[in-house]
Length: 187
Image (cartoon, rainbow, N blue to C red; front, side, top):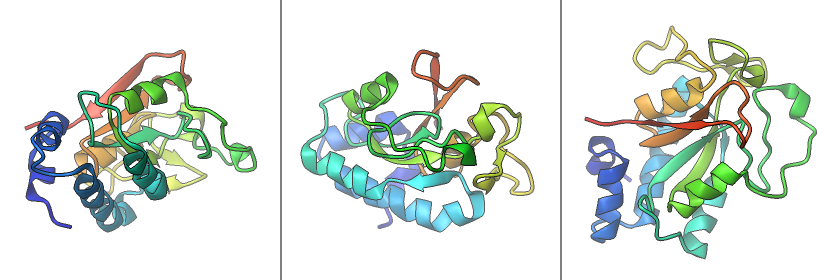
């Protein structure tokens, strides 16, 4: 689905479109998935697609938060119940998925965000470049020969590449007790 507003508006503008019923959460999710499928091959920003989980979120009813219906990506160091958290490392390949969401993940869901994937990060968040052995290098959409840098590089790449209007990031600890940041686009 091509939805011009998806590339033109920030998360606040897209949430306003949902509130006005100009677009549905399903339509925004379809636009996000289409862009992820078209752009992620080059960027390698999303390492765990969660399209079925996102569709289930919408079907189950979204919270009436300020970002209701807006597509969102989680950094791979953040737990989402039933989805593996690898922290950019093969060490966690055989670990069972968490049974519950991180506190911060629950806050994102309470805000009405639709989580449709997890983003690349360096192994255990301990590098200034996003080149985890587990996933391979993530590229900067403005110059694909370069890394987006930082431990939240996958989130930065996905937002700058207009796959998602917002994504989570965090400090090197990447646990629910640490402060979080949001990576957002704006015009």
